[in-house]
Image 1 (cartoon, rainbow, N blue to C red):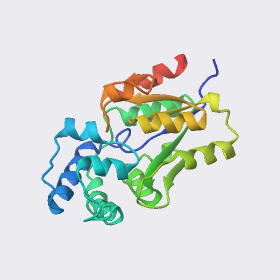
Image 2: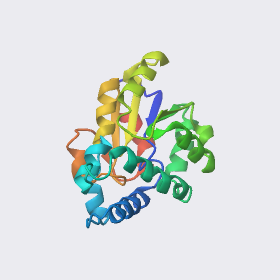
Image 3: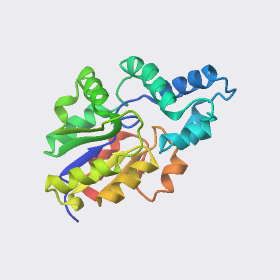
Image 4: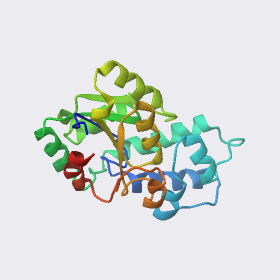
Length: 216
């Protein structure tokens, strides 16, 4: 059993508590485009996923009337200013500090645009915990698989000594592509039942993570 040296963090829904904001923005966009669908938290978490284009279809958007590109831009226009009112997930700051004290490297691997990620982490005062922020170069949030695989290949880190922490099945897919272990947090954008199907350990609170790492 190789000791963990690197923790790769998802950001949205894992470290940043933005589930309610994303649900509210989704509902506002649906109303603006004339779609009658509206989602409570349970319904939102049930349909959320990657790629975002498929999630938008499940929500009820009609791309023949409103293109995905226009909708993606509208989401960012609404989400980014409001996101600076989102807190960290409960326990997140303490966990980041505990892992830093253990001497672990920490990196964020996110489907968010890199400039948004930089601004949010700086606003919350956590940027100093991370060796690297890895974000996408556009707003369409297709996948972070290629980004993660390329960075791991260049990092020189043994994948068996790394773990991905996320809140969606896609994070498990990203981890598998990188050859790293994965732990999923069930308080984010997808419900526990969907996460359990990924075959990774699932934790209800981030505070459980530091103690878990020694058992992976």
